[in-house]
Image 1 (cartoon, rainbow, N blue to C red):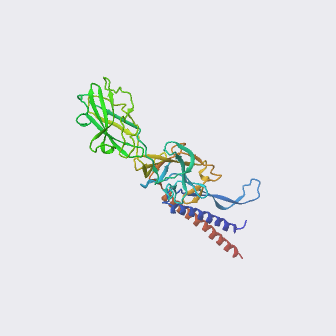
Image 2 (cartoon, rainbow, N blue to C red):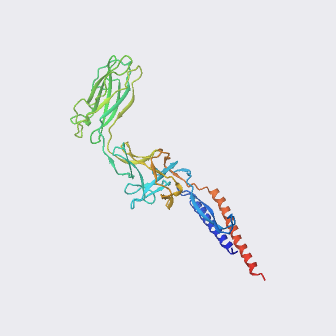
Image 3 (cartoon, rainbow, N blue to C red):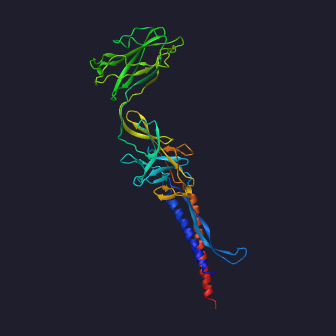
Length: 420
């Protein structure tokens, strides 16, 4: 073997250490890149020639080359951003994004997403985040991977009040009275107000008065201001509904529930008839303590527009509406792979699957080993700057050592040429 071969051996060392330095430089350059995963270069030897010999031990190396540049997929630290659309994964998994032009899927740990002008949940490249959509009521999840779309100008229709729940304690020590609609305060022992909604979502306030009429016997009377009733007089109450409640000796309600809340015949000022509504007083008691309201609920609401979104740890994306309603829109999907090192970088903080990585394994956050979602947070780069500087010193010394091989070989050739 010629002495000049050591030139190329040294050159291979320079090339490998230059690539290693390039990897370190890439890591340091992306020290603050969201979701970035640092890489490490690995070398392997190159066999030059196997000299004749029975044992095969007379083998000469020809230097080194880079065998692989592996990505370190360890999780980075999470940073709070206070931006509702920013999300991070605490644990395993990748967000799934799709190119709307080609339909090709990519995978990322960088959760700096936003909503584009068409309402799609996208990354900085315009790729659409994938997930499972809920039905129009936000209850049932449709198990098909789809683009997540949030219509910020979308209006949900109103819901008429059909059910009311009211739980109270009525003071057993009160004296019996006779209720008078013309003097509701003076002829009742307790009152509360509730707002109900008609078929077009307009609100109507109803006052409910409770009057003790005898031992373990009470009456309730619901009234509405005449200003809200066709033919009514502003400032005067109109009877909306009424009923009775009876209790046993332990103060527990014995009257069957629910009962009709609207028992009259009323047309609201807007021309709509009062809705058919049930009221349920189940759980109401008559104890010897002050009357108080413990639960008040009605299932109606007005029309509303999206006022903002929220994302929980299970990846549910919920829209908050101006009418106070919160409704599920979609649930994020995450992907994992049998061989993470088989993924290839595509730039822009995204990866692409290959045959080496295996097919993606889809699941929901918090299920099947997938991590949970942290909203208003981003995952920082997992590059350790101190470790990179130490590697840089080592690679620099290796590079210098290989240049020394070349200069020493040059000196040896010079001596060979000068032989006389």
